[in-house]
Length: 364
Ligand SMILES: *Cc1c(COP(=O)(O)O)cnc(C)c1O
Image (tube, rainbow, N blue to C red; front, top):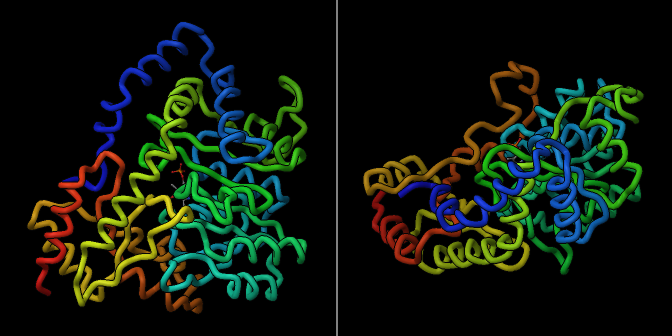
């Protein structure tokens, strides 16, 4: 069994996809045209926010959002270190440095107390990643604390499209939010894609310029630090075809996670927090001190698993010894214990039960 099955999703949506692509081909408009406008407005409406500015991928969305906040060379950007370096990569592209935060061991998410530590250290920019599809439980308090301190907050929602806290979508709590539409995300294109969303018109305007050479008018460059990072019409049309199915897909992911949590019974396994509207099942990640043995057992049973993510950011080889003095005990421990099981909407109950039985038959 695979960890994901994109061909099943494509097959299930073949007509809608073909229709979307044919519409674009017939229109002859390929980049930043009516399909992009249509998707941007539909996605903003889905979230309950004002503006959506699409870009080429989720990492560019983080970078442009940070630039729109005024992040520049030498600035520090607070981020967790267990989300695969995307924020650190975006910060580095600006010449800024990540300021790494530890996570809560149970929710694996950013915490208010760590944000407080960053603010006390003088950090003025925070990225809150809603990891594995679980909304950061303290996002309301974090947003309030940042607003009170004049600290800009970006929510990275690349794994949490459609997760809600108190009836509000993630992405509507901070000053802006970044999304990825990479094919395996809960809302995924048939290629790369991303977006920044915000309720602030000035931030939206800056990002619209930053995504296209810094133009204020055609061929007139007024904005420094700009990029070329656009969503194409084909991907926008495909995303418009997938958006109406996002909530149902999230619901199915939640069902699968609930089936795992109800079925897996093992003294050496700790199950994740994986229920409620706050969770959209992007990844189902359990915990075991003998994770490698479990992974081997599953492989022998023909079941794929993965580790999201094996190397904490502050220990990535690219940094050398730069963060040798930074210690994030929860993050470091989790990296050695986490294991991701298959969890995607096209999985059948029988497949889920097969994974449950294999996990339960593991004898470490
Ligand atoms: C996928 C992902 C990104 C980056 O998105 P790309 O489109 O691959 O650049 C950023 N943050 C998180 C949490 C992600 O999961």
